[in-house]
Image 1 (cartoon, rainbow, N blue to C red):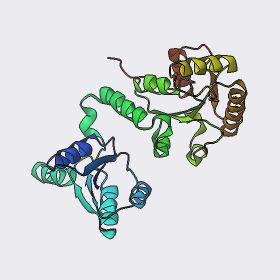
Image 2: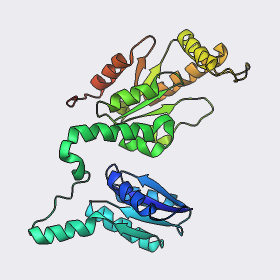
Image 3: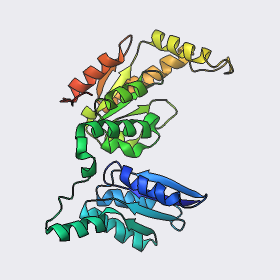
Image 4: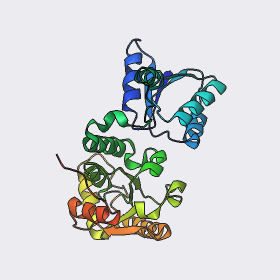
Length: 271
């Protein structure tokens, strides 16, 4: 499978559009993968090192930051990866014609209505990193929600995204390792969600009832299992020294308000 990586120091929408337009000129066998927020040399190295097959790929970059863009080109050449920077040549030509240096601001193209696009970016962020699909988003998140299954993590992320807040969630289970990145960031960004065990059991039982084909032996709503998970989550949150919110019978809006006050969110215009 040939892969086109759409790399950006912002959300990567422009790079992805160009990559998909390129892919559309060929019948099949081309995958497009967006790689946002490449803002440092460390980000570049991490991205390049994660690529397993460096032969059947190309990079389309819209990185504005000159030093990061040049470093990405250097690493790509060193590893034999074909790379094209879309905005660099266009900005250079415009700069010569205008006899003016560009500002080199990542994401400037979306500042037509920065508050609106801040919401869009946050929505895309919440979807991309929902349920800890990719831990690389932790360092770029405004809020990280940590909690057991059925503690309203995903709805909260989407509600916060509508306020322009980039939120991701980390589902907690005793059998699943906790990302090391959680212990390397500002603890104020981390919010632990807890809930009354009886309410959690009822919520999970209701969830199971929706899927009648599930085995009756499933431990998802088992009281002993739920208490074990809650104990594990409680110990983890204390290790993280994070803000803990009890979501028992609490509306999403109320929980979100507590979170926004905790992170000192200033707000954006609502449309």
